[in-house]
Length: 306
Image: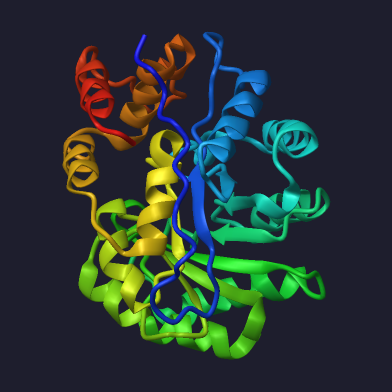
């Protein structure tokens, strides 16, 4: 079994001017039993160990967590288990992933009832080619329905998955409409020019989805990341956010990971690193990672002092 990454103590120095310093939230992978049910004890144990390894928090039900495939009752059970015994609710972000307002509100209210205040808001993604005004109407209807809760919305820009992007004018319009309720935006586009433009918005926490861009974003005020790779190297990523120093070995590893379907491979990597077979299981419509790839990448992990 490969030894798991050790905790990395990152320097206190913060570069850049930041409206908010969010740090690193691990986009937590979800462990499924062979019958497809969520293994709550393994989810809890993994949440705790990513915190222990240097993550500032965890994000549940995101892309890496297969959140689009997890129903309300399962969300409730996992939230109860993790917030009750592993991670304080203040360190949890919950991803909202729905195309109808009723379901989106139900997911949000479920999180708020358990003390979670940060919500990662995916735009409605079924209908394509929608304009900014229509998207603004949906988003404002959802956000306004949560008032007067003390909620912090992180907009989720991942157009390669949703095919529904969040334009810069739309982001500004939402910020001006809702003020501090719009905490920030997660830019998972991988488009550095878009990230650069967002980083000029110094009243928002700009979170970078592509770990390879973290060091470039830090001196410009990047606030951190919600990161799938933080399941494996949270301490290192926290150090990069604070120091702005690139880690070439980490970039090479991410280069290899993104050559394949990312979520199954990140899960398989967790399994290979910690010697836990349950992480090979994914929920349909995803397929498991190809055998052997995770072992090869885990060997890359072993060579570095993460």
